Amino acid sequence: MAEKIKILIADDHTIFRSGLKLLLSSEPAFEVIAEAEDGGQAIEMVGDLRPDVVLMDVGMPGINGYEATQRIKKSNPEVNILVLTMHRSEEYFFKMLDAGASGYVLKGAETEELILAVHTVARGDAYLYPSMARQLVDRFLKVQSRDTTLAKQLTTREDEILRLIADGYSNNDIAEKLVISASTVHTHRTNIMHKLGLSKRHELVQYARDQGLI
Image (cartoon, rainbow, N blue to C red):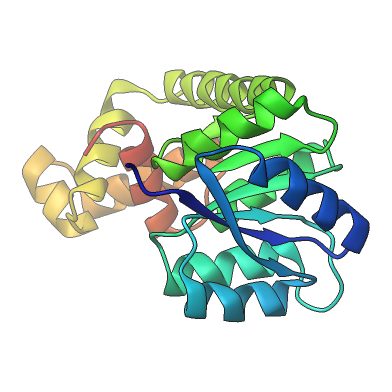
């Protein structure tokens, strides 16, 4: 017989936790092992009980869901966190994903969808509420469109110099390699950063990585 998925519920509303526990416990594959009423309790319980999935609310007193998710993923990266919240705004959505959450479901979701989400994140995959997934795709497409537009602004020489900078070459090294003066390299580098809206060398390197240049 397969082991049950161990679940910890973190939510500051007692009645909601009780109803959620009752709902999840009716699923043969699930076992609700603990309930936390704030982020601090959730962090402690995760360390002691090692659940497979934490159902994490966002807005809780004391340590909120965002900070709790960050700390749990740092100390227990194998624990999967599924956000269960009433917040459908992009701000909370992207913030929780950045913190390390594997899924995001709204409290208004159908029971079947929540059960599917728990199974999905428990096996290490990501689950996003359909309307929230659309936001993620939209943001990705906007970023891709912006980066493509920016890249097209670079001349062939600027693109060449950007690749060399990303590979770790200094201005003098680049000048010698391309048989141009160091001051010319500096001018190109300044133009590149201006066109891409960047201000530091490490930002150039990161941009080059994101574009697959290195």
